[in-house]
Image (cartoon, rainbow, N blue to C red; front, side):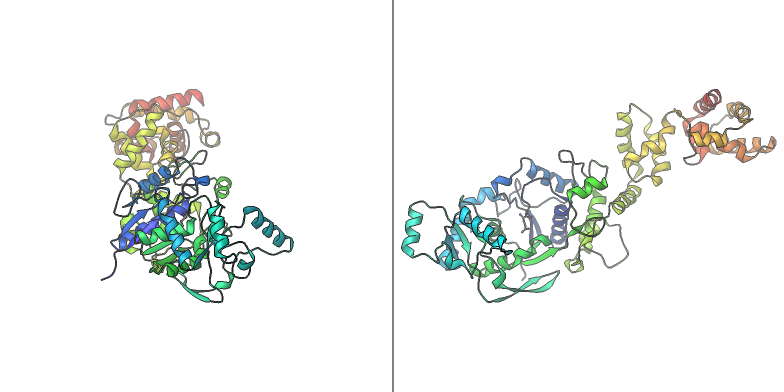
Length: 498
Ligand code: GLU
């Protein structure tokens, strides 16, 4: 009987969730749901210096907005809480000490100043200082000092850290679901600090202890953690625990392709890199993206379904997602394509839902109209919109007379004789009893034929006076919607103004 799948998203609350972090959360969610498992949120807040107020709330709100809520986490207790590492801190030291007892970790008393000096000395020689097998006996720790000296130092209250004793001369075979086997020579590893002098565990220790205690079966995280895989694998071995399986997701690359996507790329390119607005940085939500579109484009950053399909609902993603279709190489972030996803999702949304959203925008402008009218407008323009915020520009003439006329169009369409034609047309429209698109069309066409006018002399200037521009859907539809009085009024205003 195989174990129940349990995955975790383990952000540090050091600021807003970056779009890459949200992708990590999404892949965890998809994997959990696909396999009938649990999706846990664990807040890794052991580094008090980097703690940012409001970051945890932000993370939770972002997950909820995307529709990928966690099953267990802060405020949603399962059997493995608490879910904030700061609330578990009394737990970690005993694990560090266990490794000391087993001879797999040691106390180190080197002061930050001496270590800094070593670093500088090495740098001056163009080298990097690594604390490990090759020099640990020359440094100040429980491997180089006698038991007595160590006891005395601790009794005297000397500051110490606990370091992992990385093995010497071993070839490690690491396993990653996405990358396959990775071989590492342990001689290149440093003796990482597991427990700090401030009484807090480091990320490495707390992360492994918690993944073990929370019975995490799969660790799915960003590629930037791949260098930690050797240490983590060694730690599981040292404790005698079964390690979870690991999957390191490819980096998200800049739109230009090279280099990791950063906040600055967003600022330069004018696109969000955060799901929700944070301080001055606009989020995807506030930029008008639908959560469905964000989930959709994130899913395809590094994963592919193996088919041509591009539009996926969350449910479809859950059904289709597998880790073996996640790529090794970086995934290019494409803001243009993201807009396209939103446009596609906008077409999928019902006219009712879009109308509700548009009504909110109209309210802000102090414009009110019948719900059925708004819905009709939405259905006639949505094809050309990528965002609800585009609606107004595409449809303002449905709600108000033009406040100006496109100059180029005026030059081209408003000629000698046009005012007279428009005046006659206004009189004709006056006589149309049932002011419906098809009837107006019929009458106007008959009149054009009877007068032996051309379409080009009538229709373009008519569009100009009704819309203020040459844009918009079928002109008679617009006129039918705005009504007889408004259509005639617009013609008269234009004759007076142009
Ligand atoms: N706290 C780490 C982070 O901020 C978690 C890394 C992991 O998933 O192991 O991303």
